[in-house]
Length: 297
Image 1 (cartoon, rainbow, N blue to C red):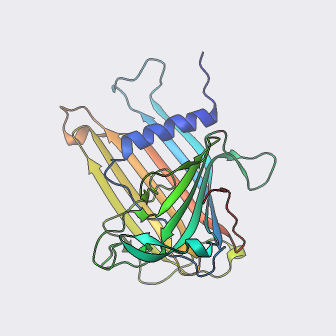
Image 2: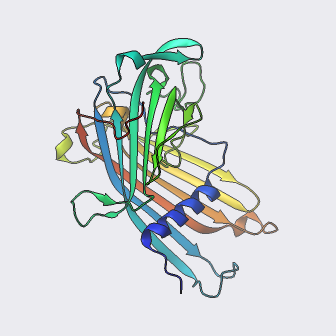
Image 3: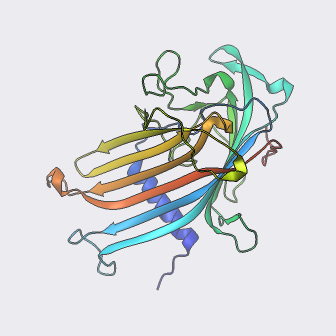
């Protein structure tokens, strides 16, 4: 009998979720809304990543897979750092012009809580993703225009442009990022670009981060997206708490992705839920002594 360990199960489920839910034409950047003035500033988020599998009747289930649902839950940490950028790297060419740049680093860990250290995770051999990228500061937009996340000429902010960068996945050796964009969704965060992000109310609210971070005000924004074909439907919902009181502009977020399927010849009313992915993240710690975990630059 084949036994699948929790870390292996997460890798399998995450891989299937990415293949099923993410069209290649929808890269996105919904995570970084602003840059802190002080280099060396960092913020750490903690939360949960949950995957639910639904097994409806009469859908070709294997005999050894029961009808019903299975739930898998992992902890997730995400740290974003604004690194101290050497003077000789502060300026670089971007679209033929000299622009001011900055190194930032993002580390996402997914796994079970560590039994050896409180607040730490045991991500296993493949549960850690580390990215270090040099970005043009002018390409970070923290405003909405008519409820849309766009730049100064109305182009959607769907990418995080980079001058160059590196990544390290699990225990593998770090490697150079070949493209000129860093795709946040889905490897780093399930936040994505939405055509519209509508405020739930006009009044700021407490995002509920706890007393350690002090008094923080945020505007809660709601985003919804849907992609549908003849056999599959993906529904993506999010709530984010935008705040000027935290580095990088995001205090908290939640995401729910629902994948439904049907046979090609069946009507749309026959869609049945197959997987549901839920992520809840909130800021828990802020500091000013950021150090890179990658020596390359």
